[in-house]
Image (cartoon, rainbow, N blue to C red):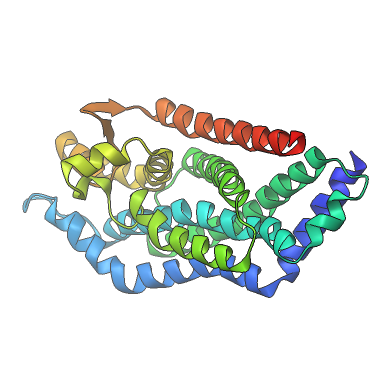
Length: 297
């Protein structure tokens, strides 16, 4: 067990000392926050306004709280997965520069080595994503705060669960990589594409019906929905307190993917947690199986 802790500490230190991997990990939440707040805030504001009847007027603070909640949910939903890939690239770099050969000829067991990579990636990703969550909450408090303590706690749970999912997914995919070129290719694809297929950049409800059905099979979609639900739940509750009709609020939830539907059936929040947690557990099992299989070979 002491060997596991030593390797985990080694991997975490190497990740934070490698300025390339570390700053690449920070780029996603930092750039997204700036871009969203600067350019997309007005777009989201108009989107909310267009969904409201002309007779309904919201205060600027409440509108900013809704927009801010959507912004930070998009940032966190993407960052928890993309940062996990960046953190896990250390495993690939060890293959590329030959360090893995030295580790494998040492008395360290293969299972211990694989476990150290996974746990170190999870811890490094959690550190960055929890820091991004703190910054996001500060931003939300500056524009319009309506979250309750339970909303914040559930948001933290969502982030941790998404980190677990992102770490497991990156471990399975990075298992097959062995060069710097492959790292760059996979990093570019994940950074550019994941935000779209999980509904972070554009709500799934804005896609065609056929694409919505396809994306409803992806667990990341439900992770985004959970984060978004808890980020704007307080603002929606305040809208209800101000007398906004329930059907209008449900329409907003549908448009922002707080309500997700699987072939016409609404997916409940407990079911979303089961899907995301179950997928993470299944990916961890696949990662363990692949490492056991490689050991036998």
